[in-house]
Length: 219
Image (cartoon, rainbow, N blue to C red; front, side, top):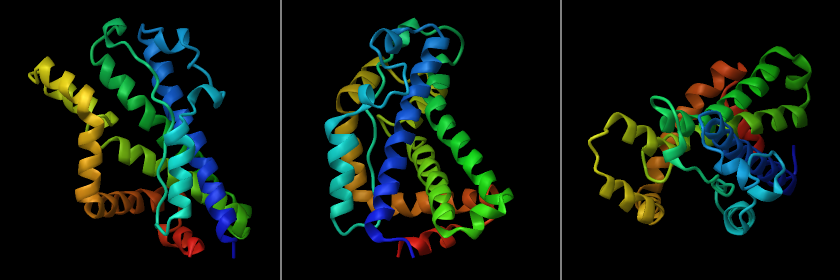
């Protein structure tokens, strides 16, 4: 059985680097669509240092590990994007989807290793590490696709409802995070139940094993 502290340290590392990949993907997509803001600010890099946020990247995950919770949350510093520089139809939606898309791609790669490489399934530590990458990246992808400002899903929602006024978008840009915290506080159980159901439905087709086999190693 994998030791408790080793377990959460590994998940912490996977979470941070997956969140950094997520933000890098946003910046790269924006740059490809005409916005050099992230590149000009030194954020178009996989070097973790420019992406580290003292609270979301370090303090919050550590607090979640120390507290008796069943999950860990955290993230990287959001990549700056100027939507007025973006070119092409649905450009802002493409930038928004690039982050979750990068996490899904990483989950697929490690999930296929689990499915097709017997050595991964036969080694408990290796199985746990690869499964952690799949789980964390599916969690980041599904969570960020929720249509709640300031998550990526809200930008997709705005794309399909262009009639939403700019005043409402500005309001969400200013106060979206507070609204987000309120929703998480009051509907946490429902949201995390929904996330785990969706992740479980995706985990098995990708890896060939049930999500419960991975979660059993956390107990």
